[in-house]
Length: 186
Image (cartoon, rainbow, N blue to C red; front, top):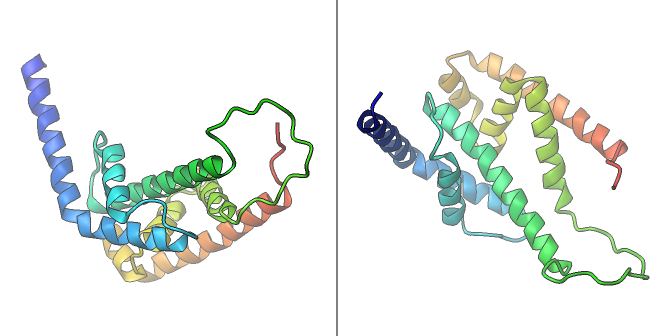
């Protein structure tokens, strides 16, 4: 393929990506608003989160709207967690260089770790069963109903209900396992 043909193909793919983004913009904005309301305090505006998500997804190809929204949900969750970590780092003096060893007792961390625990459990669920993780993303993060997910996947509503039930049980077990077996600090 010549350079001109590659440019034409990539330009067409970029146009398709922008068209898909325009089509699902209101859904993405609704997802962002819902996600940001779950946290203790808003980190960024929903519009900023939607546009940051688009920038992360603009180089990818998606077969359909459902895959795009599921991937966008994961990208949003990742951006929110990154923002929470950065905010926590700033609150704890992340902009300063530590030059001495603190002698006081460490203070308790804030409850922002719940979202991180959920994210870790979802990532682990994705390695176990990607479909169940996508079901959680579509239901919990995107806010789609079970009938809507069934239409997206072209399966029965009962199949989606079983996947949702199974995903919730597995997530609960994964989060309990992580809670009982915390990672070792290095």
